[in-house]
Length: 502
Ligand code: NAD
Image (cartoon, rainbow, N blue to C red; front, side, top):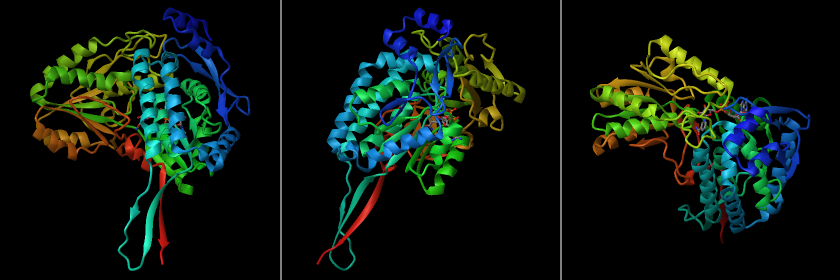
């Protein structure tokens, strides 16, 4: 670990437990064993607030993936996991949730140090969300069953359906909510009796490795959950075509999702794709403008804008546009930009130098396209991959900054004159992950909701999430759902059984 990172951890009083974990040689978790990459390769893990080296993680190979799939296969086909009754699976999941809750402070520190995010948000959102997701799906383990049916065809039949776990699940996760996104994939998979091979993002694998220690402690049989760290282009790509994986669930960018999806369909893998977004926000003239401005700022700048359903395009009624911008800017000024471990951090650094460069280039593109920069957008000196919260006004929908996912703290705004125009602007996007409406006119709200092409619609808030509600996009934001009872459908095959009776 670099001295600059050590001083950073000391400055913010990071726990002994976290320091001990970070000073270990990091290994992958395959079939219950802690192993190095089969070719010995590792990759540096950089702390985003200081740009210092934290540790190294193994860069897995396709041989490592084969071993992980084999371990998951053995458990699925006939191991202790296969034989465990649903109530026993539920108990194991609850034990795991208890352990995550017990170690929440440490996991939040690890997530913050690895990804750069606010440690307070990591605890309240990422870690709490992980616990809640595991508990919610643990409850489902005992409630999954088919139905009996009374057919109308002539004759005498017993006809019923069985719900059967799909098999070995390959889960590829991104870096913005590393532990929580993994839990979204794991919760439903474990509840249904599937086994899992996870590939975390190469930038943020540490919380998954600490999680794996807790999986062992919870007594979940070896091979049920395997963590293979490594490159997307190696391990991830091999997962998409691996014959031992029955279902692939991918969260990440739309271009990679398209590649992965095409490859996975070669052998008809079951497929869930949770992809990018450019979620619109409509602020109507009757909205509570100060409250809407705060909610919009929180909805775009949370996690420094590295949120798939961030409300990144705000369309505001022209009669309240200036007032909204004033409120928005005044509130944004109060959001503290600081290292992730600072307890008051709202805007942390971006995850990597590359992400900072991408976002900075988009800000320059916006200026060049003629968007009016009304807040932020100035370079921030290092160390740390910080980018100021940035707001553009009077944007046009044909601008790249309006059409493309930036994945940083950048909000584009434009006025509209009537709701039909707002709706057309909102739907004019290749993405359809989420949308938000700010209005107190119930009739208007209910007439707009069905016409918004988005997988989630938030009214007078942004990004409200709960394990009981499904999450997933329309259009190029993907298909399939994570969370909610709906997710279970994507992990269960339905078998129709016909028994001819005398
Ligand atoms: P990414 O697509 O670059 O990577 C996602 C994962 O895919 C990583 O684990 C990566 O290693 C892996 N990967 C990369 N290339 C691969 C390949 N050729 N084959 C297989 N796997 C490969 O995305 P990212 O930069 O890590 O995350 C940001 C993106 O994720 C944004 O577009 C964001 O909108 C999206 N996202 C979507 C959701 C959602 O629920 N819809 C949630 C979070 C993030």
